[in-house]
Image 1 (tube, one colour):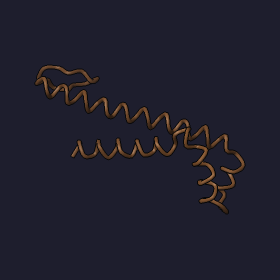
Image 2 (spheres, helix red, strand yellow):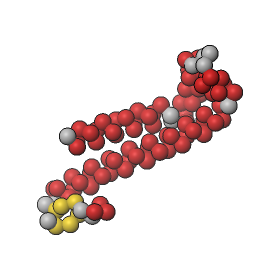
Image 3 (tube, helix red, strand yellow):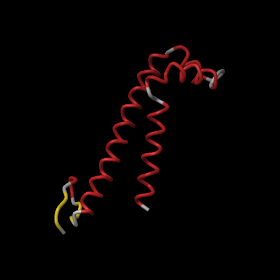
Length: 96
């Protein structure tokens, strides 16, 4: 079950990173404003796009960091299993 959950977490983080990528903001902001038209959120994004851009860049950086961290931990665990070592605290492979 842990392998399935890891794949779900990585997939969601990749999706968030893709949607909040700074290169997509030229498309994301107008679409978000049009979808949320008439709401207070839509007014906030229309009036303060810089705030949305900064939050989006922060969310992109955080989700990208998590993707690389989670993918790296699965590779590290696989390496330990392949060498008949047991994964212990602080990500070190120790003999079991």
